[in-house]
Length: 450
Image: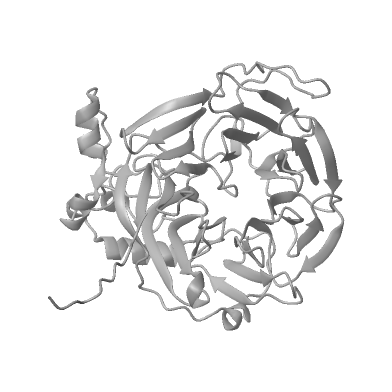
């Protein structure tokens, strides 16, 4: 992955936008780090929580009445939403590491029927705001239920409860983090001012990776952190991804992917590093198959790898992408692997025959930086760096799609475990927020005669 000069904590909220053709009178006092038009009168925070809440949040009822779901007052601006979208699409510059010809890529892409609605807008809150440390890493939001979400906000891991409508700080990584438990054989140490680059939450355990190669593990029902360490002390040691999974024997483990070309396996009970595998390029993402037997490995290479999850031995090379990959996800049935790439596509691979991908799904304007499946396997969501989240219906062979159109950098996406909610973290200086969409249900009633 590309190194970011990041001496201070600041999220990269404009992945290669160029708005120099617009004059200041058109956009008002727009911050150079905002990808959303700014209206300064709307960015003041009142002290009273309820006033803030009513002003900054948007409900489904308000959206149906015409309010913008992000609270952007288009009626007060000198341009319409459609005009701003048109300009953004024209001026957006997708980041590429490899300048390869994309001429034949469009021909490969599957024709998809758009305009479907699988998840309806439910709520948007600006009381919690996602932030991003590195512009290529967008796994900074996790849902543990349809009412509970964890996200990064500057140096704080925040918990948002949609039931209470309130956010709570779970962990402050700017302060010294001294592990509360001692584990024989582990390399635990005190850390401070960690810039969280990636995170994962599963079954009561939160794992977070840092910009300087850190790994932090915390049990959500216990105070403090259980484990903290620096995986690597190299200058190029960013922890690009963390994954929480179970081994075939049922033990929980934490898997890290780092810029030092290593994948490491930690036992989640003792926090001992039980194994590590080396690769010829920086590893940006890993994901474990549902049966815990295969490990998908993606990084600074157009090729993606499938390896034995126990030995790290590569068993298959997936060829087709044109640039570096940063996201992957497995369908719950274990047969389909989805990989997201900076060539603006997501490829679907049938692991029973990996000679070529079975489908290529195209984004609207940028790299595919996050992919998630619902737990029932019905839907797959993929997020671009900014503005667009696409939801595909797997039952239609990924031939039908809902496109969620918003403004701002996307810090992460997450379906709730029960599939009822989809959360999207938006990182923007003024309109940063947490968006919630709820799954649509169609009820069919039998006609009967009295």
